[in-house]
Amino acid sequence: MKSYFISLIVLIAAFGANTLLAQKASQWTYLFDGKSTDALRGYKMAGFPDQAWVVEDGALVAQTGVPNIDLVTKQPYKNFELTLDWKVSKAGNSGIFFYMDEAADKEAGNGNSPNWLDNFEMQLLDDINFNDTAAIRSAGSLYDLIAPKHKTLKPVGEYNQARLVVNNNHVEHWINGTKVVEYQIGSPELNQLISNSKFKNNPKFAKSTNGLIMLQHHGQKVWLKNIKVRKL
Image (tube, rainbow, N blue to C red; front, side, top):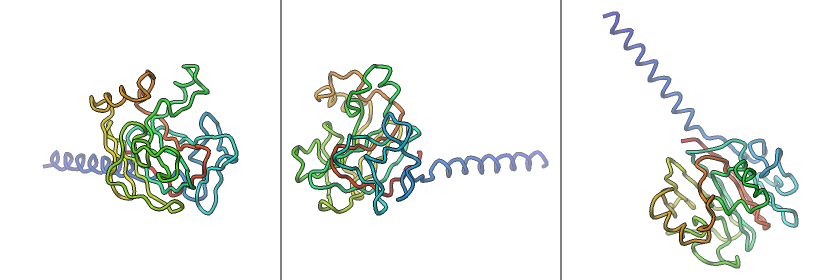
């Protein structure tokens, strides 16, 4: 009887520890809460690029007339869920990248190459007024690879919600509560799309399996707020 109770206590303790770990893993963390930028820095920079991005009325706002500097998280995320609210100016363009690997870029000697050449992007865009209206490069798309379906966007100047889920190579793009793109990294279907795209001659494209989340500064105004992430 004594050994039974000891085993039961061990099981309960193990269950409690596993539950605590699961709860901790599912907790949301703000990358930007309307005030603090402490969780972000400039791409290949130690600090935050406060001339390229300014906090205004609870939003991170990409500035125009300055050098484009993308934002990256200070820590890597492999399996995660990211949500944020976004809006763009007329003809505005931005995007969400993941698995960014600055070290690999430096080692390859391509420190000045555009980072979008190497990584998947969930596009954020003014679909109506931007000079490229191809669906495969529209808001919510897997940029230049998969066009979104069943998408509804708010008018330019109003906030949309983006949700990006990356879990064991399964990726989902959501816009305003609707799943618009879904794919499996490494699948024959996606590899075929890559082989037929402008990325086909880049041996580094989509080869990172872990890395930073990046928010793009494309030269137009974009507003981002309520940026939060949780590990899966």
